Every structure is written in structure tokens, then in C-alpha cells.
Length: 445
Ligand code: PLP
Image 1 (cartoon, rainbow, N blue to C red):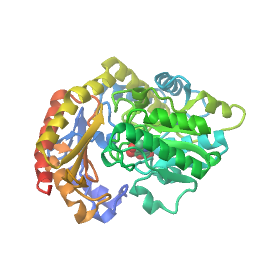
Image 2 (cartoon, rainbow, N blue to C red):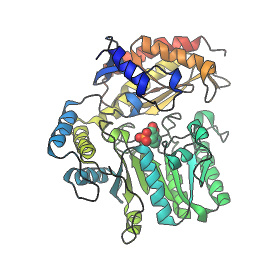
Image 3 (cartoon, rainbow, N blue to C red):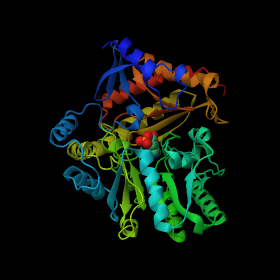
Image 4 (cartoon, protein in one colour):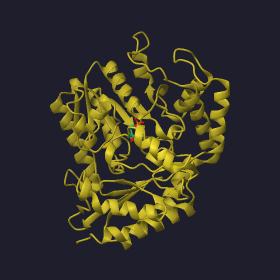
């Protein structure tokens, strides 16, 4: 097939996510390997987005491909009520990686369903209904998960599922609490959460749901003490703490689970994406013993035809083994500390439009502003069309130079595969360096 044929079928018959169908022109992709993918015309792109921040192991890892082929030859599918070797092994490996009392895994097809079922578990366990989630968040696009989402993808889905209340999480660069230090940010953010709980009625709240490190909405790394404080507040009021690690988990933050970085133990962790790098659809919830126990005698009221799909689980087993053998988590941490952090600091020193750089592991954001003093974003929150023009130009400049960027509002996220090499990072940052000249033209400070 030619690129044009692929494009023709797509345009005629594929209905795309999040899009006005007549205004898009998806690029046909012919193949991918490692940190690169390419089109049908010989254009190669350094994948600084890891697709949707999920191809943590890189494209077409040969051993992962082989493991899927092997399982396909053995047993493609078996329904969830049976015990299956790869399903059990994947659950055991994931439970072994999770903090101690989280020992059981409910498998889903992706992240939204993971959050949907985590909320179901929390409601069943507590007998309460409400869920608290942050404004700067994305939790998936099924009914409850999109309602829990704080970002604008929720708006066209309203009126939505009932019982979700939003609150502000910490964001030192644009503090909702007028904090001037990380310590103040932590203290005030926790006070705000506590007040929200008291005024909503602690006895009505099943869960606090938050991304351990907020992903799409800004790579917001929690300031010291914040997650431990949330844990304490949840304990005090008997609320389930759900950590959404769909994007942050499995190496992205230079940890197996991002909570490991802060030694905090949530009651439920949701995962997807990096667990098998999206080679097959897979997600799930890792469940603390106490919550699993609630459903020992009482049936859990949820299920999916493909829960624990053998092909997907076999790919998770193989992926975890490869991560361990190749030291991929440690590599992600080192590349963040030794290459990305200094590289971004150099870009910030050079380009006035860079207001802030932040992140960890292979999970970084470059936040662009029109004025460093006022911190006015290069484009407004939720900018679309002409208002998003400057960021579209930055994206185009990256693509012209052979880098596929992850752009959200006024930020460029640096989110390559966890397996990215130091040279690839340097190449990518050089390209972004060139593209930031475009952003600097809009600088008015
Ligand atoms: N949670 C977070 C933090 C995410 O980033 C995403 C997807 O980007 C989801 C949940 C939803 O996952 P999925 O698209 O697999 O349903």
C-alpha cells in the first residue's frame, strides 16, 4: 500500500478521537523502531512523545514482539473466569513491584477503565459515593473517568456522572495558593484539600483520585510532603487514596511506580500505557488487601470480556522481564538526571520564552511564556485555532526538523521512550532548541 491509499481509507472510514472529522489530516505511518517512526515518504521522526506517552520500551522491541508471537501461537484468548498462566504471572509480577499491601490486580483494556473500576472498588469498599479529583488532571474518557478529569475534555461531556468534586493540586510555578516556596505550596494545598473534604462531608467521600505526577496537564511533580500529606488526610477520614499512574508508572518517572519516589502507599494504583508499552491494550488496578477483602464474600460488581487477556498479559510479563534485564527503569532515571535536566536548563538559560522546566525521569515539561515576570502563557489555557498559533508553529518547526513533539496548551513535553539514548536526547534537544527560536519571537517581556 502507498501512503496515499492508507490516507484514502482513513479519510473515508476511520472516525478519529477528539477531532472534528473534516478538519484533520492524519499522517500515514509506515513503520517504527526504537525511538523513531516514519511515514511512507521516507520522513523519519524522533518520537519525543512516545506516541501517547506509552511506548516506554521503544518501538518494536524484538523480544516483546517475539513474546506476543509465541503466546499467539499457544493461546490467543480465554475468558476472564478461567485461570490462565500469563494472566496470573502478570498479576504476580505487578503485585511484586507495587508497595507491600497491594497484592491483587484487576485487569482492564486501558487507563480509563482502570480508573472507572478503581472508583467502583472505592465506592463498594466505603459505601460512600463522592470522588475528589484535581482540576489539572486527565483520567480517561469513559463516563466516570471523564467526569473525574479536570481538564477541558470534560466540558463537552457534561452533564456527566454525578458525585465528582474538583479541587486544586499543587503547582508551584502557578500556585493556586499564592505560595512562594514548595513548603508553603504543600502546606496550603493540603489545607485546601482538607477544607474541601470537611465542607463536602467526609462521610460522603469514597476516594481522592490524583495523578502521582500530573501528566498531560503539565508534568506537575508534587512538592515534598504533599503525597504523604494526602495519605494522612485519607487515613484520617477513612477515604480511599487512588494514585493514577497510567502515564507516570512503569519507568516514566525513573521508578517502577511513581509513588516509590516518595515512599507513599496508596490504597489503589491504576496503570496502563507503560505496563506493556501499548503493544496490546492493557490496564488495571492494583488493589490493597483491605479493599480486596471487602469483596471476599460479596461479589465485585464489574467485569470485562477482555479482563486479563492472555496476549496482553503475556506482553506485560515479557515487558517487565525486559525492563529488569535491561535496567530500563534505572536508565530512565539516569537519562533524566544526567542528560535531560541539564539540557533543559541550558534551553531555559538561552530562550527567554522558556518560563519553567520541570520533571523527572523521562517525564519533562518546557513551559512557554510571553513574559517571564508576569508568567503570561505563550497561548491561553485551552487555546484553539488562531489563539493556539504560536504553539502550532513550534510544533511545525519540530516536525520539519524530524522530531515528533508532545504539545499541550503552552507546553512542550519531553517524553521520549524510557530506552532513549543520550545521543538521541541530545539530537532531540537540539531540534527543540531551534524550534524555540519561533517561540522567542512572541516574547514580549
Ligand atoms: N489516566 C492518565 C493519567 C492518562 O494520562 C490517561 C491517558 O492519557 C488515562 C488515564 C486514560 O487512559 P486510556 O486512554 O488508556 O483510557
